[in-house]
Length: 114
Image (cartoon, rainbow, N blue to C red; front, side, top):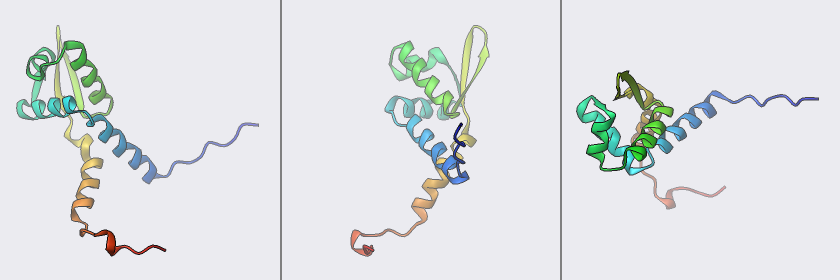
C-alpha cells in the first residue's frame, strides 16, 4: 500500500526557495557574474568569460546554476546567448534579509534557555 505524500507547508516551500537562492549565490564567481550583469543590464556569454577571467566551461556551469535558480535568464540571439538578471526571482531571499536587518540585535545574554 503506497504511503501518502507528506504535505509541504507554504512556509517550507519558501524556506526551500530561499535556501536554493542562497546556494546559487554561494560561490564568488557567481556573485561576480551577478555584479557584471547588474552593471551591464545584459551580456553575451563570451563577454562574461573575458570579464570573469575563468574558462568558458566554468562560466557556463556557473551560469547554468544561476539560471536553474531563476536568478539569470538567457535569451538566444543566434549564434550567442544574451544573459540578464531576473531581479524578481530574488524576492524571497530579499524578504528574509529585510526581516533579519529589521529585527533588533540580540546578544547571547538576551536569550533565556527554557
